[in-house]
Image (cartoon, rainbow, N blue to C red; front, side, top):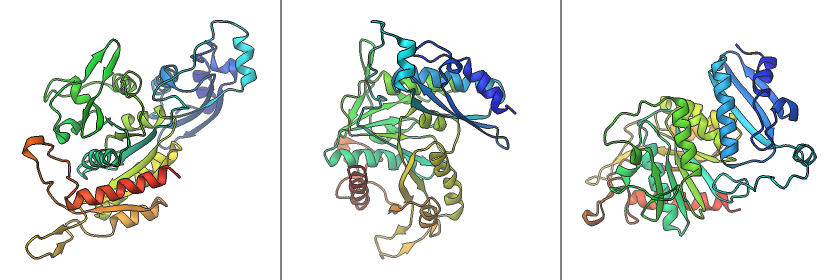
Length: 354
């Protein structure tokens, strides 16, 4: 396993993307920690300017060099170098780079909300699309990134049958139910398997953030892959900051596994907005009796463990479909679950606008 000094030596040779000077020279390696039992390396890096493609390229370069030399996973945090350090290298040159704009700019007011789960099959994507639509129904400008690269399903769930447009070098997202959507599904042949490796997937995610014309957004919802693998970690390290919602079922085992996703959010210094318990119970329309098919208590237990709150409990229920505007997984405002999602959306707004 790598030592702290070896990490500093490897990362130190990587250049600051703005100053074109090795990080060891700018004293840009602020901190290094290693968890030997899981071969995880965390580094804190100071660079001349935060945000945009240069930071993402630097991140990928650091992850690549550390994984090539023995790290299983890599966590990266960024901060800015002191102004005097930047100026000492930059001088008074007229060729100073322009301020980086766009979705990942540190000055962008958009709220990133990542929807995560510890395992597949708990309804994470269903929660993501319905929260996005519910926020749009509240008058918010919303984008949705289907970052579940291997298990993309958002376009089908929302009834999207068109492809994004292209304007020059920019991708124009598809808009549906007032939500701007981008997904890996738009860029592969139907039912074709995704067999890309990590760096290629990371580049695709980078493009989702930097080459899509999102316009002004209040919220960007990210449907993360289940678990705590490389793609989920890449998303966490790309974003300047994000809030996370953990989705689980009431089953104790599902809640136990979901706690890992919450732990990763805290480990990468992102905050947890709350827990949503899906498939909480089935209520018979004939008798009104509730059947707790997957047990009880998992959502509350998970919220307590992550020191957050339970935002809502969603029963098992089929959406009512509008044949003229078919979206198989979107609950209507008059549906019982549609009302619950609307309540959760209002909680999100209240929590993020204080």
